[in-house]
Image (cartoon, rainbow over all chains, first blue to last red; front, side, top):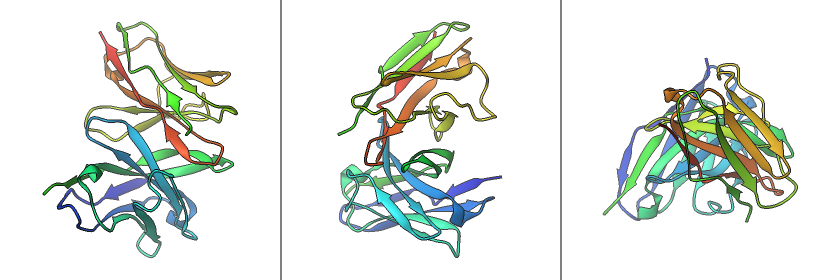
Length: 122
Length: 107
C-alpha cells in the first residue's frame, strides 16, 4: 500500500527557516516523482513543484521558484520542502503527493500525504 | 499566465446530475485531471486524462472534453459527494496548474 506520511504541524516566526518532510513507503521511492501543493487558509490548491528522487531532477512553479527548495533523500525515502526565511504569507497547509508524468512533462498527483500545517506568526 | 476557470459553486439535489466545467484560456489544451477534497482532508484523484477513472472511484463520476473545456459529471449525486472539486492541467512549459475550485453542494 502506497503511503506518504508528512511531518507534524509547525509554528514559526517570520524570518525563521523551516524544512518539512514527506516519507514514502509501499512503492519504489526512486521511480516516482513527488510533488508539493500549497493550500492557503480557505483557498484553493497551488502547484509548487516536483522532484524525481532517482536523480533529483526538480521542476518548480514560476510562482515558487526561488522562494522554496524541494529536495529528496533516497536513502530514507523522504522528500523535503524548505524555506530559508518564512513570511506570514507562507501560512498554509502543504501537501506532498506522488506524481505521474503522462506526456511532455505534464501529469497528475495520485497518492497524497495527510498535509502539514505551517503557521507563521510573530 | 495559464489559467483554468471553474464556477465557484454548483448545487444539485440528491439523485440529480452535477456538471462542473473547467475552461482553459489558451490552446493547445492538455489533459485535465480532477480532484475531490472534503473538509479537513487531503485531495483525492477522481479522474485522470480527461475521463479515466481510478479503480476505487464510483462509476457515477465521468469526464468529457470539448475544445478547451473539460467537464466533470457526477450522475445520481449522493450526499457524500458534497466537496470541493479542482481541475488540474499543465501549460505549454510543463508547469502544472490548478483551477480555482468548485464547491459542490448537495441540497
